[in-house]
View 1: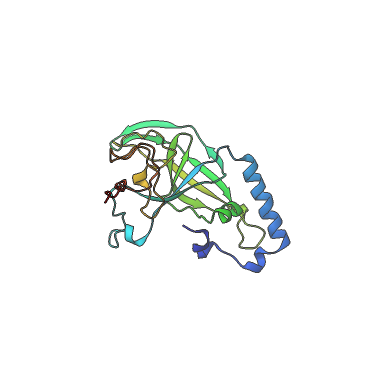
View 2: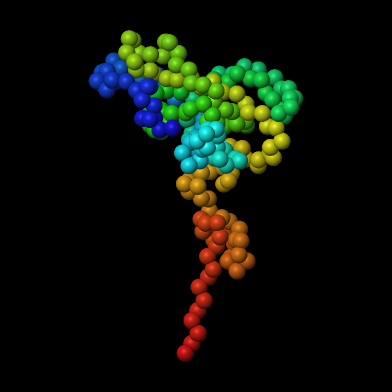
Length: 212
């Protein structure tokens, strides 16, 4: 979701412009950026467009969850020891993970993660459970929050087919409105390999006109 779409988390513009508020935001933002890992965690924004959701059951119409974009968000990651167990859903990792990011980082990316969005970190895709605003993360008695912490958990793998690179979404996982990846192998044998045409099929080459 876009950062400006969460009206309940916005604040008075005049309070936001105050020098003390800006100083507190910059100090918190610099702390997060300096302590964040490199590369930072990758956030997957779930496609929540009305045409992709059933209006009755509020579930994705597609059998596979699709994403609109992926973003690298600098975060401080806090986690405990991982305990694996085997359940009916598949392998399950019992681990508490918290991703701590800043207000200015989310504004810069124009992104506000919501429950259900995924985060790729440490070789696993984790799902956001809920955003948490710590009481001491608000500046003074204002409504300006300096940062937010996202609680996440590793999603059970079940019978899903392992992916070659889980840090990058597959083409079928991207929403139709997103840019299609370039193909490297032609579907039509008449088209040479490596022709960068971003489409589902290759265009048939033009035929030379017959000489009169």
